[in-house]
Amino acid sequence: METDWQANLAALRRRIDALDEQLIECLAQRFLVAQEIARLKWQYNMSVVQADRAQDVERRYIEAGKAHQIDPVFMARLYQLIHEETCRMQAAWMAQASQAERRQSGVRRDDHRHAAGQV
Ligand SMILES: O=C(O)C(=O)C[C@]1(C(=O)O)C=C[C@@H](O)C=C1
Image (cartoon, rainbow, N blue to C red; front, side):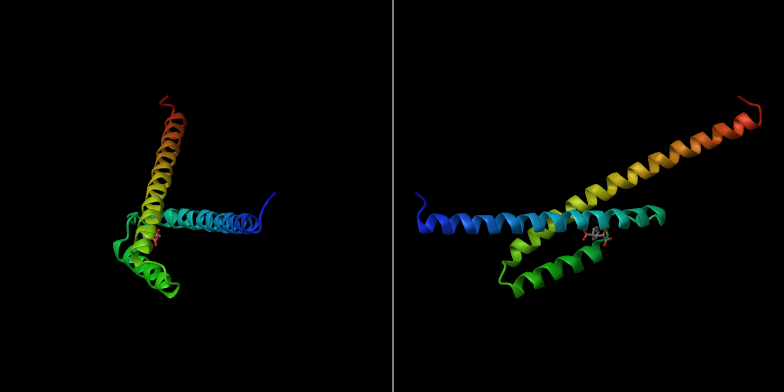
């Protein structure tokens, strides 16, 4: 039979699981926004890593964490991990966009050659 403390523990674990789900949902949304940023970076030839901006965001994580008594070292590590994955994804998306562009311009070149009767 489940005792009171066991029922309590199970209820708390359900809350943790629900909060983790929200955390993951937030992360997924953040990565989607990062994908939109990647498109702009690609269009306007910006580098993936924007050191000043990353420093500002890290500071914001640390300050926001402090307001909730969360260890600043943990907050810095958390942001570094998220930032690293964001940059990895942005670089992959941008490489893909460049590859697609190269393929397309290749097709366009072929079309010109066809039109000129060179192929
Ligand atoms: O602000 C941007 O340019 C982003 O792409 C977001 C982000 C981040 O994940 O916080 C990612 C890469 C940059 O180095 C800085 C910040």
